[in-house]
Image 1: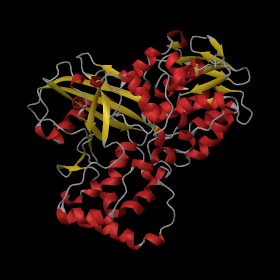
Image 2: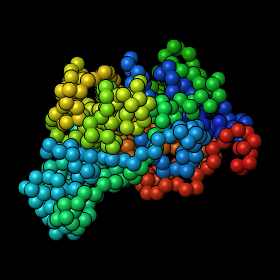
Image 3: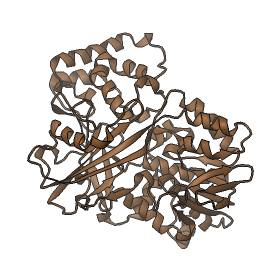
Image 4: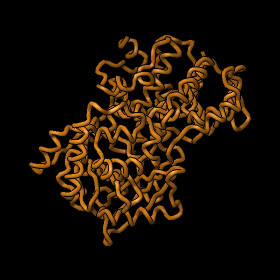
Length: 488
């Protein structure tokens, strides 16, 4: 069986790893190849070094694992005790001229008193009306039923628009799971009365990060340990003929296949597939226009000296207000001292700005606008010496869980899979709820298992189940042939 893996990000590399693992465990009839349009591996999880030597991830990535398989693979790829930096997450919200611990709803006592009253009033009103609510049909309704009008007006609506670049009424309610902190009203009121901070909510309140090379170090290493003759870089797919089982590339070369694991954005995949029985090519092109996503601007600032006292232990910061263009900033030098060219003498901030047709961005001036935003939010001041400025625009940043997403995607999945084409990964599956690095890699692993063994894909089909707890069993990835036999 010849499996062509399209895309060298976490999902594609996970598929390649599992295909090679299956082959080494004795299924020698499995043959695989990986094609990637970029000159190297990593996809949206790559790390770049700017002209001044500062490292930048393509977004605020951290390592949190729902899978023992994923965790063991990381330990195999970066086995040294000094390969990782273990971090306790400190997340804060900047608003009303101060930093408030995340999640905001558990720390309302830091808000102005009139807003505290409004937020609590909304929560209590929701409690009184709890049995009267109908099932929410979109994210906007879900927010109001969960948090009340006060919290929605104060934080949830403005922040989520900055993140998603789409209004909440255009988003579905299937994606949240562990992604949005819900409310314990009694605890909220207790914290207000006692003036007590509550920190550390969430699935990733502790995380580890590569000590050297940024997030990209993981995926570069995974690509390095796989057979190099299986990789083809700078190969962009321009057509897939499902009747002839033929892939055509931008350089006019072609390749046959028995199965495909595609990590290309699903909207693009729709435009290049030909020959399906259920959908004509023109129908697929029309469906491709219904997908919604946000583009990401990654803006980095490398500074001389040490971070200010109030940022020394912070990890990432949220910004719901209009005093800055970014919705999140990461104190990236806190993840590893080696993210700067002169450890101990420099530090760095990485900002993220979302863009969509509903939320345009002044691209030409975004660096200057973001820099002023850093000053407005007290992250830097006029005495801060900036040694490096970095900006990259990622056309595909995050897949929007838009209203009607599943109704659009499910028939497409079914039709493509009937021709042994499995669209997976952050933009291949178009499921934000399973788009972290661990999810993406396991989507690739599980796709191979389905192709070869016919097993069910848990991550794709049951996101809530996967996200509910860590997998403490997992499968042991191969290290070499002998150890693989022992593991069996």
